[in-house]
Amino acid sequence: MVGFEVGAVPFNPDGWGPPDSSAAGTLSVPNHPSNVPFAPFSRSEKLGRIADWTRNMNNQGRPGSKQGGHHPSDSAFDFSGDDSFATLAADEDSSFRLVDTSAKSHHYNPNRPKFNPRWRFNAHNARSQLPQRRDEEVEAKKREQEKERARRDRLYNLNRPQAGQRRESSVFKSSVDIQPEWNMLDQIPFSTFSKLSFSVPDPEDLLICGGLEFYDRSYDRTSPKNCRPLERFKNRNFFKVTTTDDPVIRRLANEDKATVFATDTILSTLMCAPRSVYSWDIVVQRVGNKLFFDKRDGSQLDLLSVHETSQEPLPDVKDDINSAHSLSVEAAYINQNFSQQVLIRDGNKLTFEEANPFASEGEEVASVAYRYRRWKLDDNMYLVSRCEVQSVVDINNQRSFLTLNALNEFDPKYSGVDWRQKLETQRGAVLATELKNNANKMAKWTAQALLAGADMMKLGYVSRVHPRDHYNHVILAVVGYKPRDFATQINLNTSNMWGIVKSIVDLCMKLNEGKYVLVKDPSKPQVRIYDVPQDAFDNDYVEEPLPEDEQVQPPAEDAEGGEAEAITSDVNEKKISDEAA
Image (cartoon, rainbow, N blue to C red):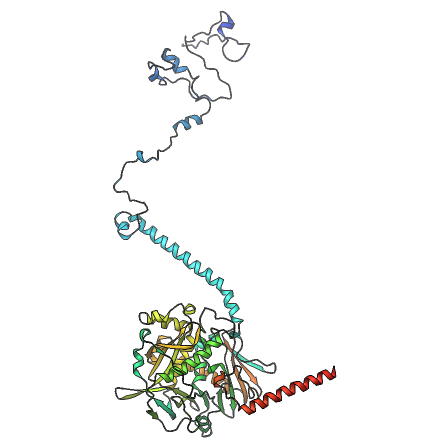
C-alpha cells in the first residue's frame, strides 16, 4: 500500500514561515531547492504569479542588463524589480496604449473624401463619394426647416402685442358713438356668413341716368418708365348721395317697384363684411313694408380704406400723412381724379334716358352713369340698387361699360414691394401684395363691378412722387380685368355674397317699423344691430372738414362783420365776468 509520508515541520517561534537557517543554527528546511530566493510578502498583498520562466530571458547576455551575470533560474523567481504585486490593475495599465494621431502614422487613402474648407456637399459628391450622407442631409434640412418655422412663430408671437396695441388705436374705434339709449337687438358673428349661399336670377335695368365719356386706351400702355402725372379735377363734381336722398329711388319706391332699396356701396359693404377689419355702420329704416339701407353723412363708406388687412401697423397719429384716416382721404381723391383722367375729354359723351339726377343745370359733373337695377330675392320681394359705372369703350363694335379704380402706393417700406421696380417684371407679386393688404377694398370694387354689370374693371397703380409728398402722384400702370374672372381669382363667391344680403334682409324685415343701425364691431369679427331713435343722425356732423380750397367762403364783408361781432361778444362777456368778480 502506497503511503504518504509527512515530513518534519519546523517550528518558528519568531514569526510566520520557515525559520531562518542562520538563526536556527543547524536547522534546515528539508527538500528545499538550493539557490531559490524567497520573496517576502504581506497578507494584504495579492499574489500575481509564483514563477515566470519567460521573463527577462532576452536580457540574460545583453550588456548593461541587471541580470546579465545571474543564473537564469534567479530571474524566474526574482520579483523584487517587478511592480505586478502592487495591484492587479497594473497589468491592465501596462496593456493600455495611446493611439498615434499624427499625420505621419496614417497612410493616404485615395477613396477618402476631402473634408477640407474647399469641400462642399453637392449632388455629385453625394452620389460618388458619400452615398450614406444623403439621408443625413435630408434630415439636416428638415431640422433647419423646423428651426426656421419655430423662429417665425416666435417672431409672430412677439408681434402679437403690437397688433393688440394697434386695435386700440383710432382706426379701430367704432365708426359711430354708441349711445346709452340705444338697444342692442342682436349680434351676428362673421363665422355664420361663410356658410350662407343664395342664387339670384339676372337683374333687370329699370333706368339709366347720367352720361359717360369714352376710355382712353393709350393708358393701357403706361409703365413705370413712361409714367404720367396724376391731374386734379377740381371743377368736376362728384356725388355721394345716400339711398333715401335719391329722387329716383324715392320715385321707384312710390311706384312700388321693389321692397328693398340700397346703393352699390352699401350692398358691397354687406357682401364683403367678413373681409372687413375697420368698423363701419349702415342705417336701416323700416317704413311700412319697405326697407331702406342708408349711410350717414360723413360716413367712412365715402372713403377708401388703405392697408386695412395688412399686418404692418400704420402710424396712430391722426395728422400723420401715413395714418389710416389721412391715407383714406388721399385714396378717395386719387380714385376720383384717376377715374376722370383716363378718359377722352373731347366733349363726346354717351347719354342715357335721364341726366344726372343730382346735378344742377349747367353744372360740370364727373363722367358717371347710374344704373338702377332690380333683383328678385323672393316671390314677393325685390331689391333695387343704384349702381355706378365710370366709362364706356367700343370693342369689336360693341359698347362695354367700365369701372375705374386706383390703388395707391404711399411708402414701399410698409408693403415691402417697390412698384417702380416690380410692376414691369413681377406684376403678379404686386397684385398679390395688394390683395393681402387691401383684401376688403378690392373685394368691394369687384362686387360693385358685378352689381353694375360692368364688362371690364380697370385698376390703376398710382404712386406718390416722393414717399413724403402726398399731394403729387404719378400713374405707373393700368390693368384691366373681367369682373367674374377677377372674383374667382380673389376667391369671391357671388352666391355667398347674396346669401349674406338675403340673411340680413330677412332679419331686418322681421323688425318693427323704425330706425336701426348695423355696426361692425371695431375689435371682433361680428356685426351688431341697434334700435335707435327716429331723430338719430338727423343733425349728424361731418367729423373731418373739407380742405380750405374746397370750402365755400363767405363774402368779405360778412366775414369781417361776423369776426367783429365775435370780438365784441368776447369783450362784453369778459366785462361781465370782471364786474361779477
